[in-house]
Image (cartoon, rainbow, N blue to C red):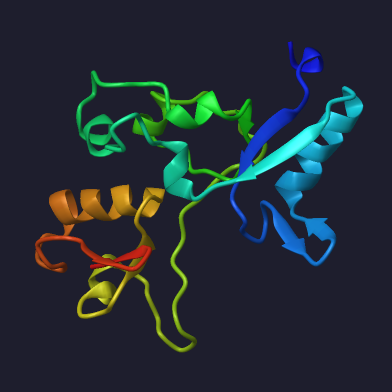
Length: 167
């Protein structure tokens, strides 16, 4: 039981809406949510900051198989260290094989572009550089788009660039 443990350990990313530490002040919607939960039940909250890819790692560090093989699933190794994830994550089928999601609010993917650039259709992306996080759900979406809808718009592979993929 959680009350019998020394700490209620929560995995969170250090991103604006989730968990932000500035000097001695902690903010973030998800942090406030889990902090209030812990207070309500008298739990000693401990936050473990992680990168988004940490949520999905197995003992080999390979998440490709779970994304492509519908029969493959595993318990992410991060659960050996934490009790729960508290974050804003897009629900996609392969992720549902690894964790149980509780939707607090709907999650959506969206495109952010420079002012004055009008992106109305997929064809408007032709010739544009697109950066997406390597471990995010956008990567899955872009792969589907490349494979099924717009083969002529993008290069034949995702090119890693620091923590992002350029298409």
